[in-house]
Image (cartoon, rainbow, N blue to C red; front, side):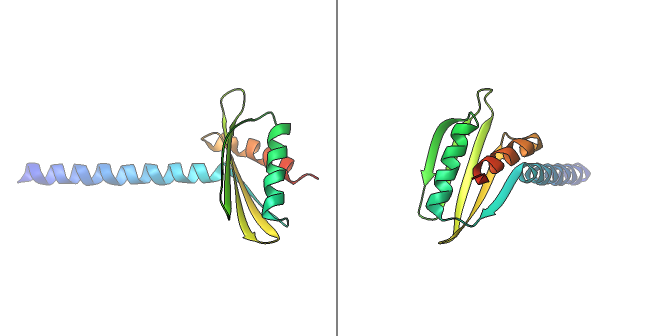
Amino acid sequence: MLKRLSMLMAVVFIAASLCGCIAVMAGVSESAKATKNLNVSYGQALEMAKAAIKTQGIEFKKAVIDENVAEVKGRYANGTTVRIKIFKISEAECRIEVRVGAGATGKEGARKIIEAITLP
C-alpha cells in the first residue's frame, strides 16, 4: 500500500514538473516573436515580406498562402530558421509575426526582419 502511494506521488510530481517545463518553454518561444500591425492590404504585405527576405540574405524554403493567412519559411546561411506569418485582419490591415531560430535569442533577428518588411 505504501509503495503504491509513494509511486503515485512520484508520478504526480514528475507530471507536474513536466507541465511546468512546457509552460516555461512556451513562454520562451513567445518572447522570441516580433509582431507588428500594418495598414496595408494582404497582397501588399505578402510582397513586402518577399522583398525583405531577399534583402536580408534569407534562403526561401516554403510558403503556404491561404485566403487569410500566409506562412513563409526560410533559412539563413548558418542554418537558423525564419518563419514569417501574415494574418489578414481587414481589407486594409494585416498583422505580421516573425520568429527567428528556436529560442529567445532570435528576438533581435525577428525585430530586424520586421523593420525590413515595414521600411518603404
